[in-house]
Image 1 (cartoon, helix red, strand yellow):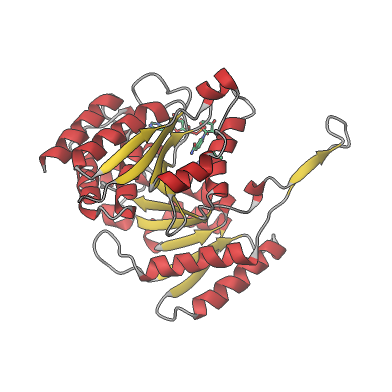
Image 2: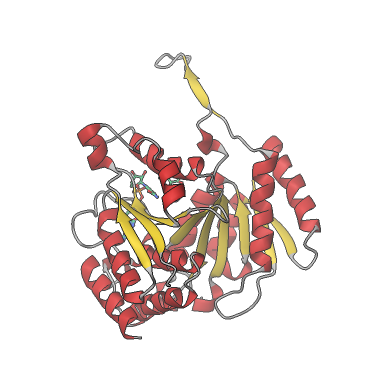
Length: 356
Ligand code: NAD
Ligand code: IPM
Ligand code: MN
């Protein structure tokens, strides 16, 4: 009997609702044995009945599904962003998805804004801590609305949290290869320990301890400001980057621009051995939404990442090859210089996946 994997699909808001259907078409064309179930969590539902995640929603995802495929959350009609926080950060925190894996791959040299960069020159992975840091919502405001107002947003770093993400990065490095087959062999830790000495100090100490257990892997370090400069100057130098929640968020938007923009970047929110969640790096792009113009490739590549995680390596590789070919043949949306709609790009990729 075929071992079908159950996937919960939460398209969310804005362009999430346009790009996720294209990812589903690619998944279907790949023939991977999946059972998909849609959920309406997002701004519309919140505005209609005030709910973000139904009672026991996270437990249900963990119990009944092998993976979650999500679009994007954020809607100008919900200025507090409360639904996005409860749904997206809710999944990351409550399901303890402590690894935010963001591969940075340039599928075609034409997409990179840097001079003289080949496709193989951009092939690294950012491993972002996903359950701690300034995202924890620890802090508060005092004397709000007065000239003496105080706002505190605490940066929470636990020994356990720092150690598990650093260890995951060394394990990932030990067990993965670049697209052209080179075994990965370097882990770079990115922090701001020259200014944030308490949190940075913990990261530094743990990094050195864990690195000592992996003598075959070269350990490196950069401050986050210098890393941004280096990323825009020469992306060839990176292999595996590990960093905290906030820096990981920021540097992966920068890294997306090396890949052709936010419309190309994929990510996984992972707890090894548990139900994990996959989503494109981009947001709901409210100004672009409803126009059939958003680039679906980031969402489609995300579905390929999910397939690989679920053990369907061949189907995953076929989807990725189809996206690469679409770029090569300029079957792209406006952000990549093409003139196709979201649906047309999705059509092209799905039929390519089905035909190879
Ligand atoms: P965004 O990623 O939505 O958009 C940033 C820019 O990139 C915009 O110019 C947009 O048009 C462009 N862009 C993004 N995705 C694209 C695609 N697939 N094709 C073509 N162009 C694309 O970020 P933002 O504008 O800062 O945020 C908009 C909303 O999305 C906010 O509510 C924010 O909180 C939310 N957001 C959600 C997620 C998520 O759910 N994972 C991620 C980021 C932002
Ligand atoms: C991302 C997004 C989220 C984050 C927002 C929407 C909270 O920017 O997934 O990169 O900061 O993690
Ligand atoms: Mn982000």
